[in-house]
Picture 1 (tube, helix red, strand yellow):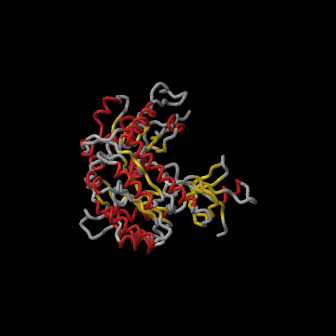
Picture 2 (cartoon, one colour):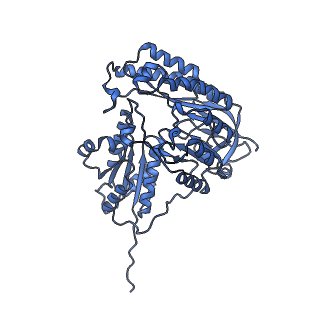
Picture 3 (tube, helix red, strand yellow):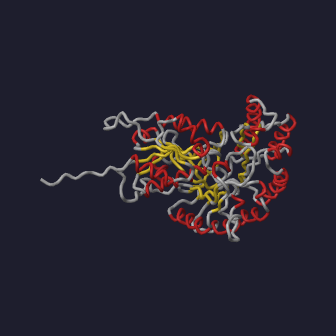
Length: 461
């Protein structure tokens, strides 16, 4: 008889990600590292989590709510057991906690969560691979090709990491360190590879994209980079995210208007409008004043411009008059989307030590008021698009509702709503789904809206 062949079992590492798109980039880098080390990787779900050989929870800890959500996700992962019939049924898979919460609270967490296998700081992929090799030594000796080989409908293109700003309320510099730009050749190579693989929307991100290149020993800057990215063959959309108000220059606006691939979309965190509050936040009031002038120019150059901002309500010492000033600003600026946060006094930030801290209830009340006000404006802005014909990006199929799920150019993934496309009356759902695959573009007419979501029907090309 021949010798028995032992089948190599390659462990699967499941990832779950909390927080902003920058964390999504970190997760993708971790996935690539574990695949290069010989492991399968997958996105986390209840089904996948119960069969994974290890779980990595990539956390957010920007504010208290994000920290609490991360802790809940860690406990959810710790509650999982291996599937029935496993030889190690009573053992839970290793749970590895990575990311921002580790940079802030590693020592406290290790005491409170001894069940966690390891805590990995932001960006330390080598430490992650070492932990996995200690826990799961049966990995392949060769790199693994990711199971889901289809290009995603969009990819984040991180051009820098870290932050040098001194905002008194923010924990990001202490978590991610100083601002560091990537080399332009590296960015362009990655962008070309993503487009060659079939991803036609790239989202440029950093803590502040306008500062790109200021730390490099070259003359490159954001404008130079955008002019190169925007002309990559087959690229359909280039979206810019996280631009600080002082970065909204005439040159940037002209560059955006010049390239049809650059989406007319601005995401600019203003935080407040009152000069005294902005100074207390460590931000320059003149930048916000200038933003209002530049916004008018932007809307003239790009009539179909979409604008998103983020605001903080209930900052220490915020008076009723200053809060009212913020409300009036929201009404007059007519933002399409507004993210509103009640001020959160974070450990080791200067703002947490300021006098005149407002009660939790008042901070929440003011944030909700601004949110409701902004939503009424944003919902109307969405409804005003009814009747428009636009090209949308198909991102999935909803068999239960019988619709395609897509995104228009004015919708950033996960935060700005979706487009639901119903099939023509003479087409079956099956044929409709087969005709329009994920990551394809389709021209539609908007026929209705619900909050920030749009309903649409296909139109002739």
